[in-house]
Length: 305
Image 1 (cartoon, helix red, strand yellow):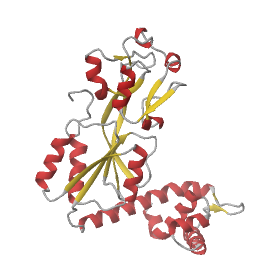
Image 2 (cartoon, rainbow, N blue to C red):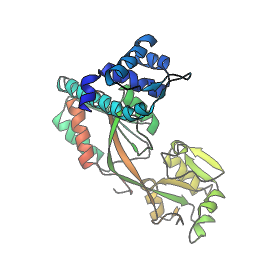
Image 3 (cartoon, one colour):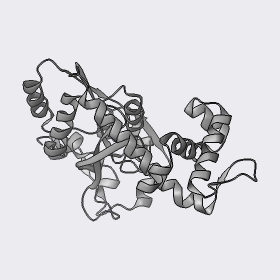
């Protein structure tokens, strides 16, 4: 890999990778804000420098050759390391930021968020902290754009290449119904039985990567867990919700957790990730908050903690 870096400029590697990801030289040129001829020349010169043909140009759109398939992952790694290197250098010369924006998916709560922010404020009293709530996909987009510094989301199937992440723990999710509903009277509930009854679905849960499940053929959507609880309490359907949002209602008997045949525990667990961009400089306070969250964050999974 080091030999490749010596024989190829990062501008050439960027042209190579972007042509592959965008699917054509013209699209890569638009992405890189360069003329198409410049991108084509950069890739051609890279092929000369490496002594291998990276793209098959015999078709309408360039496709990776066998050598290109081998080299593309190496090029992506080099570009990522280059981005991290530059971001670290920028961070070392960046003055203390005035504000940090932390975005959290609405169904995730931290039991000790206030304690973590209090510690940050004691160390950086001049830094304001803004906490916002967005859907997971929006959080990723805002971090890539530099409008949000850190995000906390349920583990997605894929993280954009510009983002890094670490696990904070797991969120417990349960299926609940009214205690007198037909589902609540079953000793165990199958997937097919869930499909036969109306589901109250959190709107973000319409993304299969952000919720326990979307099972029913009859769906009523809501925006918040509180709205879902209200409808389930009215015996209008069942819902898959974070345990912390329904724990009090289960304890008082207002809701019942459904025992699912397809889960070994009375709840399902989804990983919670902290995400950030390694392509953007990170201020001292943001780096401290990231460290504190990574080491100390406690995912709330009940009404108490």
